[in-house]
Image (tube, rainbow, N blue to C red; front, side, top):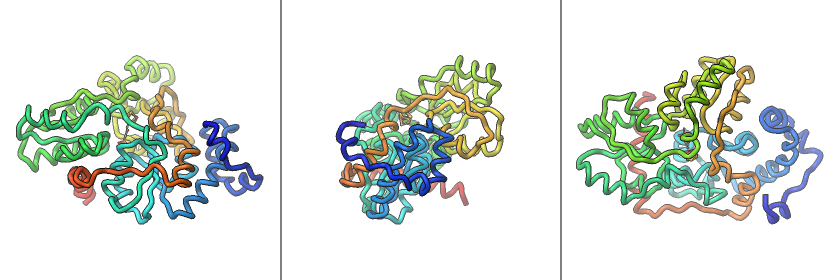
Amino acid sequence: MNATSLASAPRWRDDLSTEYAGLVETLERLIPCMEVPLHLPWIDAINALKRERGAVIMAHSYQSPEIFHGVADITGDSLALAQAAADCDSNLIVLCGVHFMAESAKILAPHKTVLIPDLEAGCSLASSITAADVRELRARHPGVPVVSYVNTSAAVKAESDACCTSANAVQVVEAIAAETGSRKVIFLPDRYLGSWVATQTDIELVLWHGQCEVHEKFTAMEARHTRERFDAKIVAHPECPPEVLAEADFVGSTSAMGKWLEKERPQRVAMITECSMADNLRNKFPQVEFIKPCNLCPHMKRITLPNIHAALRDMRHEVHVPPGVAARARLALDRMLAVGRRDRV
Ligand code: 13P
Ligand code: SF4
């Protein structure tokens, strides 16, 4: 919190703890209880601005509990947020997540205003590849379709045939292969997600060398130690290195991890992913004990209650995507969403 945000910080009122009694109980389970009274005035001020402006706040599962539980109207993984942006009634969306997620929301809801509280909230995967790299890959593999993880810039999506998230990567790869008649697909930019997808399908994948700076840090030794020392189930995101995934009882996307917990209800579990994911699930599964390790995403953590408040107060920072790029990126995102719709039928 800098000097400016402190100067304009909303003040504590005694009625806040009664008005937000349910939220206080939730947050006290998830974060140090002394932090809760610091967050409540911001939460109250954000909720008031949100009503005044008719805004919808969307938060990714990696957002801190005070954001996820305190101010978000819609929460979920990147697929759920993309779908929600496409379907949402409000003309103003505040995207609490990283920049590629806000760009996806803008592409899918072009007539709406999309704000991101911190423009610097990037992603190591999105910055690992450019549109020129994709064009070069296409030239090297003529006729081979391109599937891009949504963790890419709008310009990279515009050069792709379809997008995917970790929740639907296998289905999208198989759908695009069937549609184009190609047994080979260029899969960008996460080499670890790509090598995991390759184990789930017969389609040959050409991979890029991008990595998530958060998930690449986990080691097989940590996972093994956690299982042996704490008798915990190991659940890992497919952005982790293959040797970590080999130690896991379950590998799945952000949403799949939640569904697995719902079904299995283990006594103890280690979520090998971003820390807030486990914090936010802990509330839903009070009988499950969540064991570290976890790693923080520094980009997701750039989003804070004070900068969400400033975004709504000053209508900053609006996300823009050049119309030509947006139109082509939209085709790739729509193809992904169509695969999801087909699977739900
Ligand atoms: P999801 O697609 O599972 O939401 O993950 C996004 C992400 O950034 C994972 O690191
Ligand atoms: Fe990007 Fe990794 Fe952070 Fe997800 S966790 S936003 S993939 S850097």
